[in-house]
Length: 305
Image 1 (tube, rainbow, N blue to C red):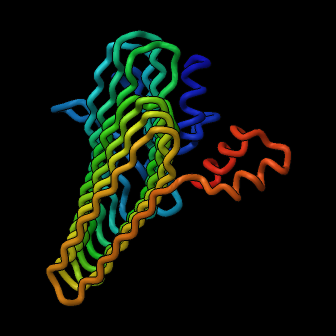
Image 2 (cartoon, rainbow, N blue to C red):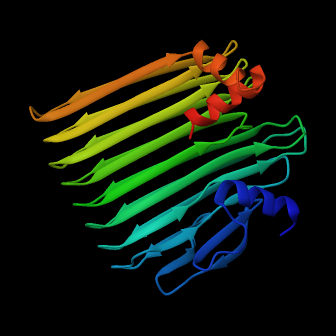
C-alpha cells in the first residue's frame, strides 16, 4: 500500500496498522489483501464479484474490516458482500469506501451488503464514505444494505458520509422478527452541487420488534439532500424516526416520512426538523475569537458528532 492508500484507509476505517483480526481490503475493483481467522472466515464468491463473511456461532468481542478504496478515474465497481452471523455471536464490522479521483472521468462504487443475523446475535456495523481528489470527475457511492433479523437479534448501523461525494444513493431494507432491535444512525455532509439520497424501508414483522432511525445532515452550497423513511408495523412493535438537518447557503433538504401500522399495538413515531444555524451559537463562538467560518465549522462538527 502506498501513502494515498493508507490515508484513505485511515479516514474510512481507522486503519493505522493492519488489524489483528479478519479483514479484506479491496482496491480499484480487486482484492488487495485478506486474512481469515478461526472465528471469522472470508470467502470469495464464485458466481459474482464479492465475498461471504461467516461469523461462527457464539463468537464474542471480535471484529472484521472490509474497506474499499478507489484511486483511479473511469472505474465502475460493483460488489456483493454477504454476512452470515451465527447464533449468539457478537461482532463489530467496519466497512466504508474512500474514492480519490484525480481524473475528469467518474469513479463509482456500488456495494450491496446483505446481513443474515441468527437468533440472539449482535452486530455493530460502521460504514464511512469519503470523496477526495483534485480531478473534475465525479465520485459516486451507492451503498445498499439488506438486513434479515431473526428472533432476539440486534443490529446497530452507523453510516457516515464525510464529504466530497458527488452523488450518493443509499438504500436500507430490513425485516425484523420477534424481539429484534434495529438502530440506525446516519450523518451526512454535502457541499457545492452534491446530491445525496437515503431511503430506509423497515418491516417490523415480529412481536416486540423495534427500530430507531436517527438522521443528522448538513447541506451547504447548492447541494441537495433527500431523506425517505418507510416504516411498517405488522405486529406489536415500536418504531421511531428522527430527521434533523442544518440548511446553509442555497442548499435544499427534503424529508418524506411514511409510517404504516397494521396492528392495534404498533407504535410508530416520526419527527423532522430542518433549520439554520442559530445566531446565538455563532455569536457565542465568535466572542471566543473564532472567525465566522471557524464558528460554523465547530457547530457543524458538534451537530454531526
